[in-house]
Length: 70
Image (cartoon, rainbow, N blue to C red; front, side, top):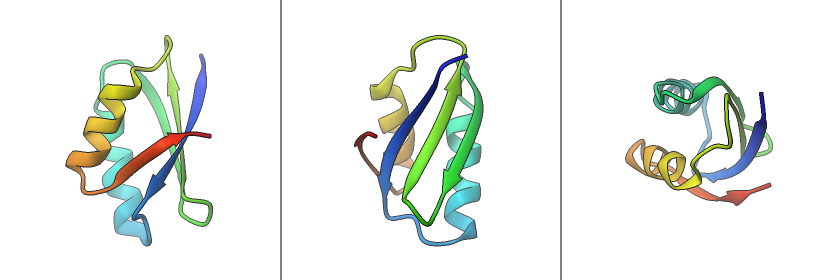
């Protein structure tokens, strides 16, 4: 299962971590989400190549900004 790491702006607390973990984790192709507040990175594990646009939309709807892959 591929893991892809994204840079996400606007995360600062445990609530941010929980919100993104839940929002991204609800996508059908996602099997795991790890949020690192210290680095501002979110690692997403998927069964196939992730849809960056779909993940960016979910992150945006949650109130954060996906700035790209790391």
